[in-house]
Length: 311
Image (cartoon, rainbow, N blue to C red; front, side, top):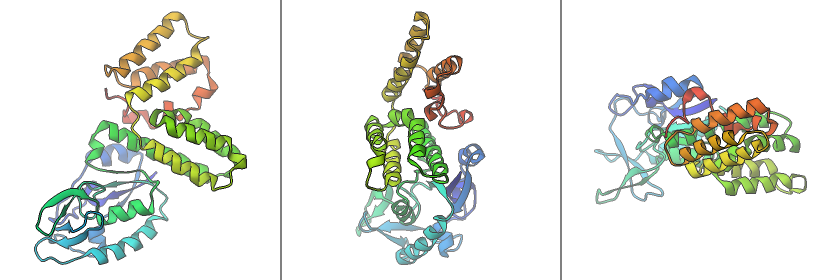
């Protein structure tokens, strides 16, 4: 899976002061599963290392990229370079992008934008990051700082793996049957993020043969929009209880109660999600439940990442 990433995060000394912002989790842990496509807008645009630092000024919705001391405006040049770089990145088959937080070129949110009086507001988006997200609105994006939050990290990685599955689907025959299979595989994952989108996509697939628009485009747009919602403990517990229904005639009364208890304990925040998932996975294998065996929800990303191990 190819993921775009700000070069300084990989340990490259490309920052304005000649330093880097190496993130070991991104390189050493996620790097076992991702192939990184490094990007440094400021250096690739043509600025030296070290260089005069820059910041965003003016309207937060359309800020200017200006050097702090000399006041040189690099906005137009950066935008011209960005247009060319995005055309190149479109050919890379990216599954997502990890931006450098707070960067005036690469920050994806909350970047300082200074008024004419020199007063900052944390409402900006980096010049390159804004253009990237507008060009590739479906791609999962996150910044390095937010990836230290276990909930946001899990959400990002789940979206990346789901998008990769979509890319694989697009490499096939693009039939209605293939889309139905894809949707079936991702039903419970969708339900855990957004029951609303789960319902919308279900109706879309059910009416696929009579659909007049671009079926595939509408599906992935709604799917990626739904997966942006955080899978809260309440929504996760609802999915787990839904799965429990498949074992009604298979489990003993004690086994059912044990599963109910661990789901409730998870919902209250006392144990991590992996606890009920392991038990349900055991029963899926033991009783060979075909519908549940195919659900990406049970294995949306490598277990070695331990993304479901936080309470």
